[in-house]
Figure (cartoon, rainbow, N blue to C red):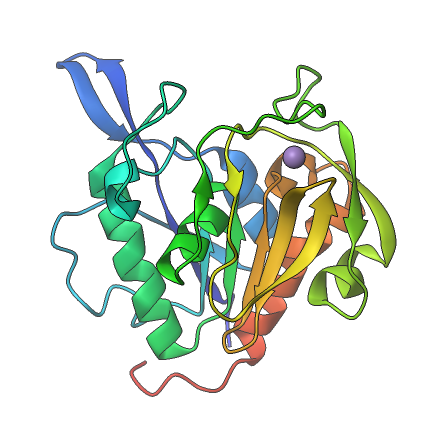
Length: 240
Ligand code: MN
C-alpha cells in the first residue's frame, strides 16, 4: 500500500483575510510534518456541520489535535472563567469522528484536548482549571520539555518512550478528572493525568504536545511512527 492516510481535524480560528475576519481551518504544520515523517499521508479535515458518516471511509488512522477548550455545554457544566477558545461546532465534528473511528477500528492518537474529549465521551469528567504547584503552561519554547512524567509500565506509552520517567512539554490549563470507562492511565505528573490508553480500542492519548517536540526528539517522533505503523497494519478496510 501507499502511505497510510491519517485524518487530522483542523481547529477553526477567526483570521483577518482580504474578505474580512473569517473562520479559517488552521492546523500547525508540526502535526502534519510529524505524520509525514512517520511515513503517513496527513489529510486535514475541515469542520463541517452535521457531519455525514463515511468521512473516515478511506482513512487508516485518526489524529485528534489540540486547541481551545471543549465547550462545557458538552458535559453539562457552567464554564469556569478561565475557559477559552470554545467552538461547539468543532467539538461536535470531532465527537462524530471519534465514534466513526471506533466503529471502523482505526487507530487513534489523541493530543491534549483530544484526550480530554475522549475521556468525556466515555463518561469521565473534566477539571476545568488545574490548580497545581507544577505550572502546566510553560513559557519555554514548545520544543523543550518543562516537566517530568512518571510512565506506567506495561503500557504502549512505556513501549514507545521507555519505562520510568520521561520529560514533556506542557500547554494545558485543564485536565482529566474522573477517568472514562475502559481507560487506563499511562502517565502522570503528580495528580495530573498525562496519558491514557483504552482496553477496547487502539487509543494512544497524551496531555502534552509531542508534535512540537518531534522534529528534535526521536522519542516524541516515535509516537507518530507508532500511529502510522498501526494504521498500515490494521485489518484491511473493506470499503476501500
Ligand atoms: Mn502537563
